[in-house]
Length: 225
Image 1 (cartoon, rainbow, N blue to C red):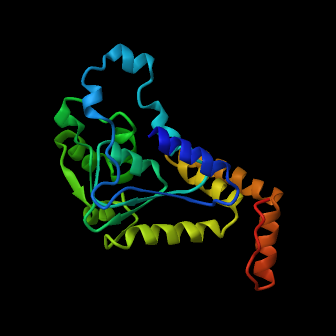
Image 2 (spheres, rainbow, N blue to C red):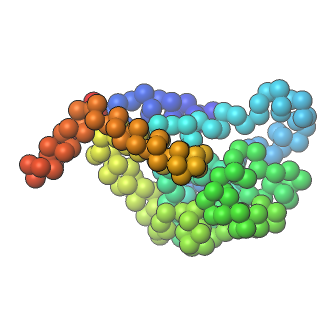
Image 3 (cartoon, rainbow, N blue to C red):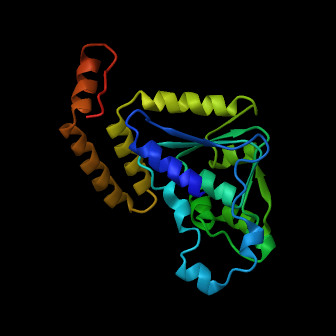
């Protein structure tokens, strides 16, 4: 995850990048934490060292992130996928939080993000049994946006990233911030927060360009300003 975190930092600083696609191999999206390395860890080491804290880099990215999942997304792999804004899955992908089988629990967001994605009952069942969810079930539950054949999922994720990148990067970041806030705020506070962000777009050149282009019936030329 150190390399992924560094890559996300680099992509965030690159003005030419409008969206980030994260993927793995055809067999596994991400391996998660090293179980053998964790065997000898103590509570004191985990707590004082804030173990796994650096994994949140993906979730904190301002630019939209897309997970293109093939194969297994279990444990830390499932948590990494859920840190992304959108999940596309290959038809043979599977998701789960099997940490209970190791005598522990998810530690990088699994208990928090999964319940927000698929509801308490389904999340509780997966986390307490360690069972897996197919790509098709994950789509029906709302964890996954779309399911594609294995050989198409990465291409489709890149196409989505390219489409998002055509939009104003400022507007995309504000839209992402507003949607993510819905998990933390009451409806009343969320609506106020959304309105403030909406009003802030009127300070940008891209908002003026977008509305002008619509009125003139042409494609907008966003400058990310």
